[in-house]
Amino acid sequence: MRVLGIETSCDETAAAVVLDGRDILSNVVVSQERLHSIYGGVVPELACRAHVESLLPVLDRALSDAGLGLDGIDAVAVTYTPGLVGALLLGVAAAKAICLARGKPLVGVDHLQAHIYAAYLTPTPPVPPHVSLVVSGGHTNLYLTRDVADHELLGSTLDDAVGEAFDKVASLLGLGYPGGPRVEAAARDGNPKALRFPRTQLGPGSLDFSFSGLKTAVLYHCRGQNASLKTPPRPIPDLPDVAASFQAAVVDVLVARTFEAVEARGARALVCGGGVACNGPLRERLAAEGAARGIAVHLPPKKLCTDNAAMVAGLGYQLALRGRTADLALEVVPTS
Ligand code: KG4
Ligand code: ZN
Figure 1 (spheres, rainbow, N blue to C red):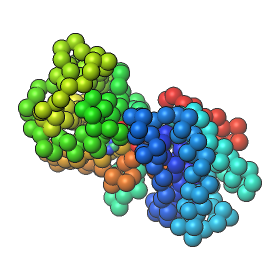
Figure 2: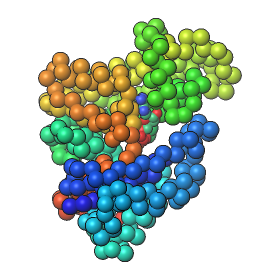
Figure 3: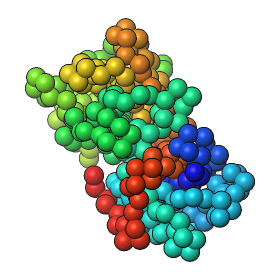
Figure 4: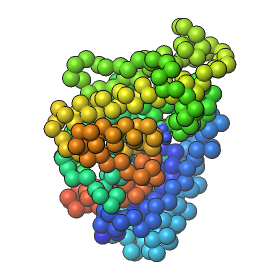
């Protein structure tokens, strides 16, 4: 079964064709990074306009890279939640149009579940049940995955998502947008032990996260005690140390909570997905902790961690197999 996937939930316009939920026949991603970088974050209206411009060429390219026309597609899977409402609507409208015109089944896909599914597109896919950590620009969620289409939420962030924390700290440090890769690059020249930033633990047994205290600690360090974002920036002579110490605090918290979840649920495997799963130190620590505990750690390649449509098409196939197709009344759900 060849599934066409469409992803437009935020600032990437993406389409892909995946065979039987495993083999990626094409995977096209057009990033709007440069468009939003001058504003220091995603501007929803601009994102929508850019999706309108890119979507049809991206779809054409995904089909031609796969050597297929629309008739060679057996189903269309599209991200319908969570994301920017206007951006989601564009992808869903395109998917519905194809399904209506060509009589194909439509599948609505949850973007966060798709980030987990990215691990299933690798040569050695995980075997459920496993714990899943989704770390993206908008979410920091821990799940117990019983099946690729059945996830129990175990914990999530009470304030900022981890990607958002990276992006805000990058902006504080004057590194620009998107922040994650730039903080990671700056941290390479720094000492992760130079500064002791807080590692918030929300009570015994809690698998939730909080990153706002950490972000404020970085703000105070860079601009002075009790500073606000309106306080004028000043030179940050120890910028690499700040970046490295912030990143170390984030990694410590993510790794600690994740393995607490693994232990609490007696899981033998772990998946980590989403844009922040590109982070080198996070990948290394998860892999090392997993190896030390005999837990199989599945980290998708970086290209499948950031937003893409192959993960949407892959999960779409699994949902279609389980009879979970949608009809043309499918509505977008911006918040999860
Ligand atoms: O999953 P994603 O591509 O989009 C959303 O669904 O939000 O995640 C984007 C987030 C951004 O906040 C970006 O700064 C972060 O992933 N990110 C990283 C790295 N690469 C991307 N964060 C830390 N280190 C990285 N190398
Ligand atoms: Zn994402």
